[in-house]
Length: 221
Length: 221
DNA sequence: CTAAGTTTCAAACAAATGTTTATAACTGGA
DNA sequence: TCCAGTTATAAACATTTGTTTGAAACTTAG
Image 1 (cartoon, protein in one colour):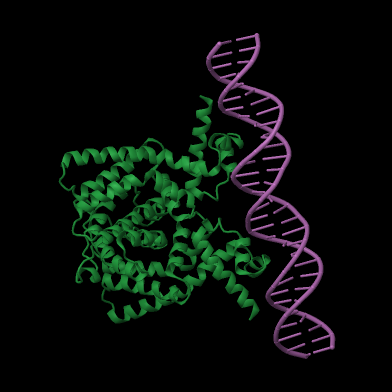
Image 2: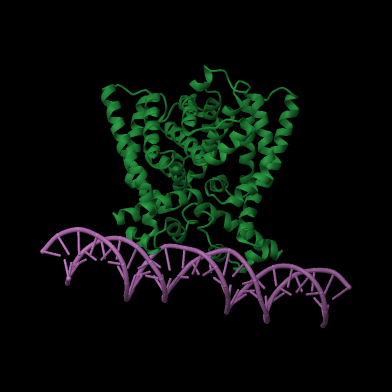
């Protein structure tokens, strides 16, 4: 299993370095030397650096989407057409997110990669993620819609992205923030702690009153 | 005023390109050719690419911190020792943020730069921003503390970062999100619209009930 | 006008990057 | 054992990068 070993070692090393420094700032030579494989191995096994980046994402996102779809299946079966409560939906998502990286690296790496995918204008990455994994997000938002019928569609859209920002931003910068929190408040924060803290915040944010310009005026379609 | 013209043209061009592509992905040749100045001009006027990046930030952050400090002065004078309501603090911050870029480019560029500063592990940038502009943030959080006495310190710390994530993430990815929103909901969203939408969300998030593991157990110091 | 100082410019530099190539080493089945 | 197919390796390749250089052009004060 020499091939698989090389491929895995490249992926393991690349994901850590990408998360630490970003994609453009991580050279193939840095990856291959740290992974103790030949420089040409990346192009041989993956074709290009771009494809390596996508492969790093696929290794997280493939199991995640699979699990998330299954979890949503169960949830829908259990509620049998009834709208699923917002809290249950959020818990399910958090659960699926937490399950996957537990098997390999830390959630931090995963989130940091997601944050980079959004922030770095790496066009190909955004497109790739949207095309490959957009469907599960669409499904999730449709369920959120049933759970929050009082929200205008556009308002829900924006609030979901507000919350997505909270999660990705905080978790992707977790290391630096954790150091501060530990120094200033003497408490060591785990990812699970953060998720616990996030839950009431996200729920409250989604259920916040409508902004003035929407609550008084007639709501849009 | 030939020098100033060159310097300004470099800064104007660089900030847009940085915001669009990131720092590592934007070469000095791209900047200088688009700005119609000589390649060596960057090193002549700024010394290095790193210093150019910092100068781009300084041009936003210097006026911002000055205004924000002044606005907080007024607010503190008006409330004369009384704790300032959370909404007023948030409005003041939003106001200061909105004022500055109105004079030059769009807020989007500013936010996107901030997002990049956090997400790209550009160590020097994080350090630079923390050292140069950390004090105003410290002052702001102290006021937030008085406005939310019911929150444990660590909980407030995390919630502030949750909200910071919402703002930076949404506003820095504004272009892509706006396109979706316009296509799906037929509404053109301005930055001011978004800030209006953010307000009730942020307030509700900051005032959300404590998470289970904090609300029942005795609260930490 | 002239000389000193500042700014521009084209060219070159060294270093680093992703990728390709040709060869060697290894692998498993006939 | 031998041979196809796969994988590993070192070397080279063509670009691109940030930076430096030295001379030209320009500006400004005496």
